[in-house]
Length: 177
Image (cartoon, rainbow, N blue to C red; front, top):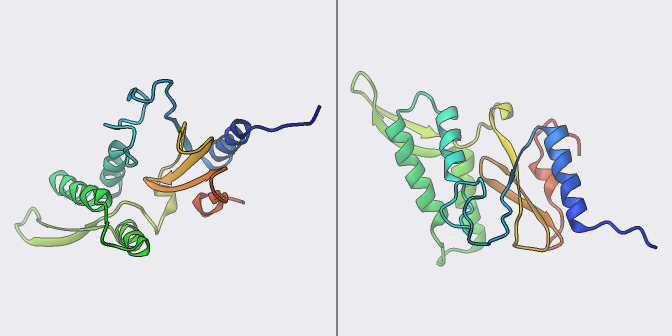
C-alpha cells in the first residue's frame, strides 16, 4: 500500500509548525454549516475577509496615544478602502493602495489636549518592531480543497493545492524557513 499524505495532514503540520515554532495564534473557522457564523472569527458574514475585532485591537495596541474616536474613524476609512470593489482599478494598483495603508498607516487629524491640531498616522502594523505584531493562522477555508490563511493583523497569504505555496513570506523576520 502506498504511503499517502492528505492535504488535511499537510495543513495540520503547517499550522502546528507556525504555532509552535513561530508563535502564531490559530483561528479555526471551520463549521459544518456554511451559514453558521459561530466560528470564533467575529465576522458578520462568512465572505468577510477582515476580522474587524482583531484589526481594532491592533490599532488600539499600536496607537495608544491617538484618541479612541480617531482610531475608530481610521478603522472606518480603512474598511471603506479595503472593501471597495476597485472595479475601475487594475489589480496592481488596487494591491498597491492596500499595501500603502499597511505600510504607512491611515492619515488622521485631531485636536490634542491643548487644542492644537495634530496630524498623525494610525498604524496597522509595526514595521520597526515586528514583535509588536500578532501573527496568526486561519484554518477551515472552503476556498480550495485545503487551505491555510496566514496573517499579520490582516495581511494574507494562502498555501494550498490552488496555488504555489507562499508561506515563507508570511513568517516572522527571525523565523527560519
